[in-house]
Structure formats: structure tokens, C-alpha cells
Image 1 (cartoon, protein in one colour):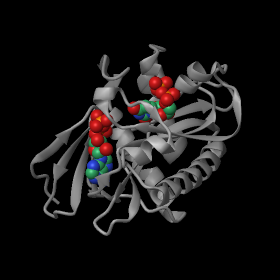
Image 2 (tube, rainbow, N blue to C red; image 1 turned 30 degrees about the vertical axis):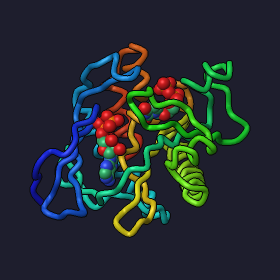
Image 3 (cartoon, rainbow, N blue to C red; image 1 turned 45 degrees about the vertical axis):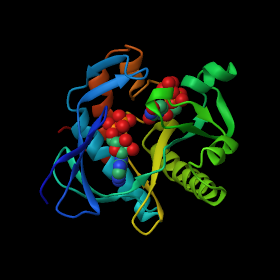
Image 4 (cartoon, rainbow, N blue to C red; image 1 turned 90 degrees about the vertical axis):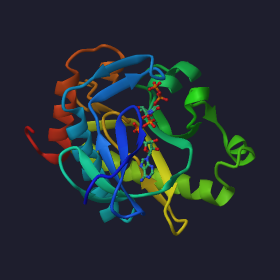
Length: 239
Ligand code: ADP
Ligand code: UDP
């Protein structure tokens, strides 16, 4: 499968056309951004690690009956995926309060939420990805009621699968962001990525942060955290 023209360059990935019009090649970069792109940097080997971790999770989810865009890993930074029309929503699930919910609701970071919290953010860089509710989503025609039901159901199921898997590896799944899209048959499937860039992972024993917060908050040992998550998730000791 050959990479054709680059269709899109985002903050963390590049998207290329492939030989097949229904399939895309995703290339994972080492670039890292935070705070709406105000903070920029590089995390060595992040692209390789995120490609591996995301594909591992997508395969695990497929085995449990969740449809995803993944077709196959092509090489250490590139994966072949089904092309979808991305639903412009960032679907966030939270098990423990951290980041924006802690600030917004005045909760102490680390507070266990009595039940998982589902949030939708409007994927729109010009607006800074605002938090929106179901009424806003329907008014903006980003998704209808039935599609929202499917998104919520899939997000809850994904949370259960990843939470249990990670707990066994000694990791608390604090929160994460998902993106969904519609494939050529109009079916909603999981797209984009699931990685330390898009999740908060805390060591269950020490509560050490093993995700992109180490970059966002200048906590140091950023690369080590990504390597540690690769090991915990896939068992792979080194690249
Ligand atoms: P951003 O656009 O936020 O800077 P990335 O650098 O991760 O993010 O760019 C990847 C882009 O590709 C995102 O906009 C994402 O919505 C989109 N995308 C992910 N998976 C697919 C897919 N299967 N089909 C089409 N677009 C996709
Ligand atoms: N997240 C993401 N992309 C974004 C915003 C958030 O992947 O554009 C993830 C983030 O890594 C965390 C979860 O979504 O796992 C919730 O993020 P939060 O709303 O707390 O935002 P932040 O504190 O990162 O601004």
C-alpha cells in the first residue's frame, strides 16, 4: 500500500490518500501541542509509540465487538484505516476528576466520580473546542438523537473494556477522548487514536502521571512515561 498525496496535516498526525479511495494512511508524528496549540514541542519516538498503542487498543476493542477504522499497521509510524466522515465531536469519558472538569466544577484532581461522566466538545479549532450539550449538538446538526445514543453507548462500552484492561496492568484510566466517523455505508465507527496523547493514565499504586500531562504541565520524564505505557499495554520493553 503506497502513500499518495497528503490530504491533511494536523497537530499530531498526517493523513495521506492511498491506492484505495475508501482507505487512508495515517502517519503519527512526534510533534506535541497543548493549550490550543500555544505550547509546541516534540516528544521523541511518540509517533511510533502512539501508533503501536492505538492499534493495540483498536484490536482489543474489535475483539470485543466495537467497530473501528483500523485495517492494519503498515510500519512503525503508519497505519491503514477506513476513511470516514468525522463527526466533529470530541467524545470525552471520565472516571476520575482531572483537567478541565476539575477546574470547571471545583473538584479536587483525583476525586473518583461516582459514575463515568460523558461529555461532548465541539471539534472546532477556531472556537477552541467548546464543551457543548445534546441540544447544542442537535441545533448545530452535528449528530441526531439516534447517533448521539450510539456514540454514548459505544463510549460507555469502550470505557468498560479499557478500564478493566488497564486496571490489570496497574493503570487507572482517568479520562480519555474519542472521535467517531461514518464509513461509506453510513455506519458509525471509532476513528482517530487512543494513546497517551488522548488519555490520562495514572499508575494505580503511585498515582504517577504516565501521559501527555507530563508535557502539558512540564513534569519531566515525558518520553519515559510514553515508553512505560507501551510496556504496560503491549508488554514491549523497548522499541
Ligand atoms: P488535529 O486535527 O486535532 O490537529 P491530528 O493531528 O490527530 O489532529 O489529525 C488527524 C486528523 O484526522 C483529525 O482531524 C481526525 O479527526 C482525522 N481522522 C482520524 N481518523 C480518520 C479517518 N479514519 N478518516 C478521516 N479522518 C480521520
Ligand atoms: N483530550 C484530547 N484532545 C483534546 C482535549 C482533550 O485528547 O483536544 C483528552 C485529554 O488528553 C484528556 C481528556 O481528553 O484525557 C479530557 O481532557 P480535559 O477536558 O480535561 O482537557 P485538558 O485538561 O487537557 O485541557
